[in-house]
Amino acid sequence: NLKERYTHEIEFLYSRALEVRTDLSTSETLKQKTRSLLKSITTYAKTSQNLKRIEFQHLFASLGEIYKQHVVAYKSSLKEQSNIKDVSAISIVPEYGNLVFTSREDLEAYAKKNKQKSSTLLLQNKYKKLSSEVNADLNEIADPVFDRAPQAVTQDLSCKNGRKLCVSTGEAGNMVGAAFPKGVWAFTYDDGPNPAITTQIMDHFINYKDSQNSVGKATFFWTAYHFDPKAVSAAGIIANQEMIKKAVANGFVIANHSYDHLDLNKSSTNRIKQIITSNTILETAIRKEDPSYKIQYFRCPFGSCYAPKIPAVRQMLVDQGQMHVYWRIDSLDWKFKDSAKASDLIMKQMDLYDRGIILMHDVQTTSPETTRIVLNWMKNQNDKKGKNYKMVTIPEALDLVNGK
Image (cartoon, rainbow, N blue to C red):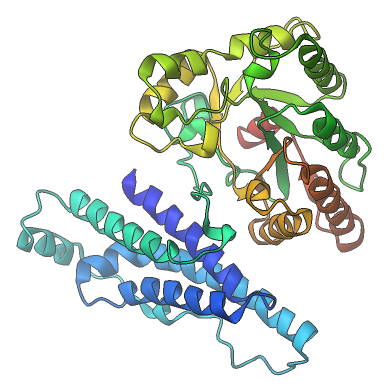
């Protein structure tokens, strides 16, 4: 659904822009650029055409909630860090908060006037236009927080047999974590294993305990070539196999992240099929430790599962009985290469979203420390602030969403 996709993409970008705008440590230059971005969104809302008022009513109601959450946190920061006690003048209602619904007749009249065949097409085109304009503004902001394509999209919660998520080519087959119960988090790691790094990350979870979690949990999306004797030395295969042994012994879940991390949208159909089916290499390696293990989850390299070729990819996944897994929080560890920055971004978004899938990488040298910082913060939130954050693996999250 184009309208839903663009809506949630804009929500994500808007949230990121507000995060920079209300961060007291952000440079004034970057704040000015984000002001321009926010202005472009609100200006687009102030249109007189009735169609646009209907079209964006739901979107801007959602943006209003996002705005409110950020500003409440911003006021608190001002009080604590800037000695500004009277912050009541800062409104929690954005300028576009007074948009109103108009009639369906106005919508049809506008569509007819513009010689559109259907109001649906018109809606899609308008969302596409806004999304393009917002992204054009983002391109001018040279900051890593905006550099990766947003994946925090809320899925369509529809599936057969009363389930909300299932293996499917549609949104119900794409898990992002927005449907998780409040406080539920799934930590995920891509691109590994890298034994020197991965084992440290695992140890942080193995040794974790708080009032809500008896042990830490995580899911690892690994690339299959790490277990291919044709691609890796004998010593490398042995070291990587040890990571599988450690994962199986400690309840970590292993999922597929393709063979060698090629961008699926830039690959031929035959190559895509080879990449998707490479889970047999990974699965064979896992079954040396757990003979009945079956890989049930896949994550596209670069998260590039909205591109033109992706419907075919999603069908291949369904044919193999695998669900696609996105994320709701991107740590940007691959961009920052700084555990303080990556952990700060994760914690801020955890505080904002209250549930979801977190993306990190167990090939980044900063990831063990990033993990340690976030887990220490989580323990403090649970033990001292009553947050009730719960860690789950991806299959456990699926069961929770589907009421099992």
